[in-house]
Image 1: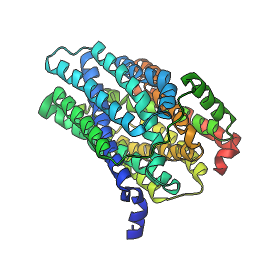
Image 2 (image 1 turned 135 degrees about the vertical axis):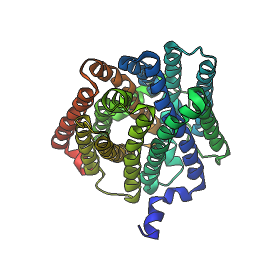
Image 3 (image 1 turned 90 degrees about the vertical axis):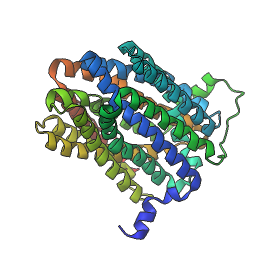
Image 4 (image 1 turned 60 degrees about the vertical axis):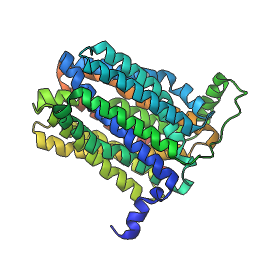
Length: 405
């Protein structure tokens, strides 16, 4: 890649305010990715049950589904930077409580469920805030680049954090890794604290939360493109993404590779996703975003089916690279299209509904984990990939507005 190409790919990071925000993302997502792997391993170690993994995931997902809409209303009313400082601090406290319980040898499944619910409630405000603040940090032509680099921060941690967490369990124990997770959240809050103040448009709070919520839903319903874009967010996450929560089943029951192998499975997805993020970032203000979205969703489903039917560990890692790349391109493109098609005053509420779809992931894991419990992980993941393929073909044929975006 030429020097100008590199500059295009990382152009948003030349903005100091966005750069500090990106570093906050990096610290926060490092904690989240380590937590995802270590919590899953701890739950499976305590219970030896795929269904228990689904219960923990549902515990985090249900609050997001129930409260993200209200979170979006609050995001449109308050200073987003201050809100994110609060959410990162509260998440650090919740993780610290679990770390202490593990150190004392008192940890049980119900503690982890309660913590998952608390984390889900916090994310109901954190996730829409994280998305809605981006257009206030960069100019509109840079939104796709900034979103892609934010996705790159997530995916960079998906490469490093899962493998690191798996290795560190053997060095410092599960409680030690949880203390490291706490430190990451504190670091994230610190970067937000030193980030320059952002001119955040704040709504007049004379209207009620309920009326603002109804206004946001009406705005989305009247839009010619937002309902289709939100549908493109819901189905791939609901049927495609549960594979991530079922990785302990593949690591133990399918490939028999232990905690370190689990880290490699997660890292393979992260490497592919990181490559996908940088590809999107390098496109700049790409014009055929709708076709890119549909193609990425199609290949996401196809690679999931290939992974589910793989009986060799290293071949599975290769297919997970494709899963990660396609998923990353799809999510960054969908996020960008939502951002640029939403008005400033409505962006928090629009992105809160997008973040509600993230809440579908832990909730969707519950039926997927029940299928995995009775029929096996490959059947659950393969079926989700097939549904995603069919849905994408239907949307391509029946929603020409998507193709033209």
